[in-house]
Image 1 (cartoon, rainbow, N blue to C red):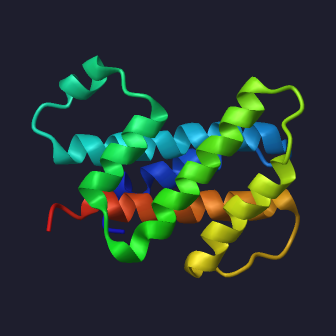
Image 2 (image 1 turned 180 degrees about the vertical axis):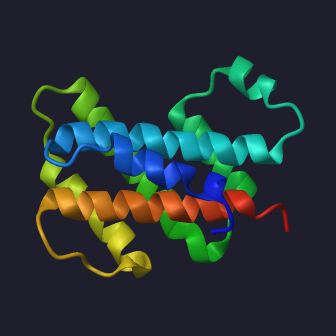
Length: 147
């Protein structure tokens, strides 16, 4: 990383991601990943205000960022963020989400199997490592211009 702007997303993640409440970790992590998606979109368009005016949903932002930054070797990124969005929606809209542990495990495995390595430790430490890895990967995607 070449300058302080490069580490800002990672610092934000470490600052705002709680370390003990899994629900809050998923909700905050989702928001921080969304910031990275917005950053990718803004870096690729001429008039970013139009993106704000469009009031895009998280899923629409995900699809646009994937369209603009897709590389076959990073397919896991888009799939894992889609899985994260499913977990977040379950937590935000259901008092007792069915299959939450299965979806969380699937999210963790998608990220860990991408090159992070299986993390040791409790669910919270694994989640934090996965969010950091995803955030860093998205930052790299955002830095690569078309081509």
